Image (cartoon, rainbow, N blue to C red; front, top):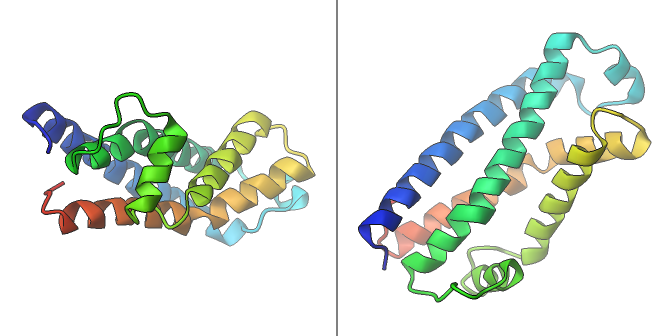
Length: 160
């Protein structure tokens, strides 16, 4: 069960994730016509569109951080799971057992992809470009994980 402080953290975390998703979706809409990116397309993109790609990467990363560092833990605390001494992989295992995550490897893949893009972008080569395109392709996966967290909370009578 969430105490008042945790309820506030959950509420603030969800607000922050929602804002970041609004901005992520905006950046996606602004870049859709450029996707999938090729080296040729990327080298000829207007600076404004580069800023939307940057925004997408930043918001994707921010959402992942908020979910991994706050939301996942708060979801488990809400259903009285002991997470005090649990590693992040143990937390993912528990979320998978509770059907909050379809598959923990999906989250691990999203994180790996995000890290690849963060380390290699903006020095774009074929590998970095491929990772960037995959990051755009996984938008719905990230959104689905978030929605599953919200649905899980609601199904346990926890108002986010």
